[in-house]
Image 1 (cartoon, helix red, strand yellow):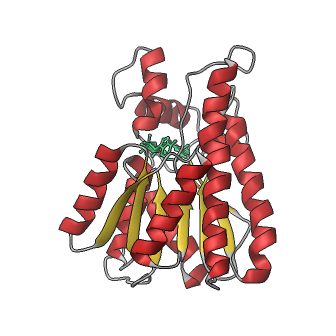
Image 2 (tube, protein in one colour):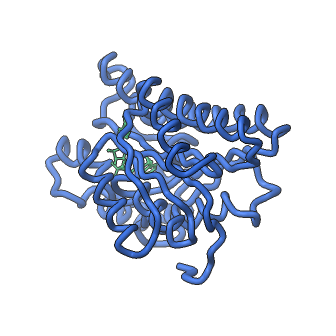
Length: 268
Ligand SMILES: NC(=O)c1ccc[n+]([C@@H]2O[C@H](COP(=O)([O-])OP(=O)(O)OC[C@H]3O[C@@H](n4cnc5c(N)ncnc54)[C@H](O)[C@@H]3O)[C@@H](O)[C@H]2O)c1
């Protein structure tokens, strides 16, 4: 990590799903670069913990509870965050859920709605609320969604997850077009495989041990020559991409999907 960069001093950065995994890594990185970070999550224990970790390191952070699938909850989050830290400069729509390995024919309607409720509806409502806050305050900010390489072409048995992430990608591009006249940039990061809690349902279904699914599939990808950088992705890899996309270095970049996946784009 570039320890000395301080590109976000006093900027208000709000991240959903920051109570664990990739969101936690992104929250730490922005805080290390001087941002005032809102850690938003449905998991209060995880979110409070991440905010405390940041404060322990001398950073500025506050936890707010949110359920991104509820419009009321999202509006309340952005309102409270703005009261705490002022107008939003950067938002990262990261909260997401996976599913078990059910096919498009097997997945239940309730499961479909749950995955789409968080991954798609949640991204839409959160990004829109943040965009409104930016426009109201004439902030030429940056909006980042977290999609997935699976949203770009999945050969896997995922009834809802892959298509939900394709929807996130197309929503990102649509929003970028709407917000370009206001000087607000919108991009997406498509992570490859990162060992996080996201794979717990899959591990349970496959009767695998905790944290064993990602290393196993990475090994398979390496064997079949489909992983160009032969290691597991880390939350820090995604965080590095997020600070880049939010920074002035990316001021000519909008409506893009940045795959941070060691070259596995077509692996799954
Ligand atoms: N881990 C990977 O390999 C991988 C790959 C591609 C994309 N992603 C995406 O990265 C993002 C982060 O996932 P992760 O891997 O860090 O998993 P994770 O499970 O560690 O983190 C997801 C976070 O979202 C929160 N969350 C879930 N539902 C929520 C809701 N309704 N409201 C608010 N918060 C909610 C969870 O509490 C959790 O803290 C997700 O959008 C995921 O789809 C992950």
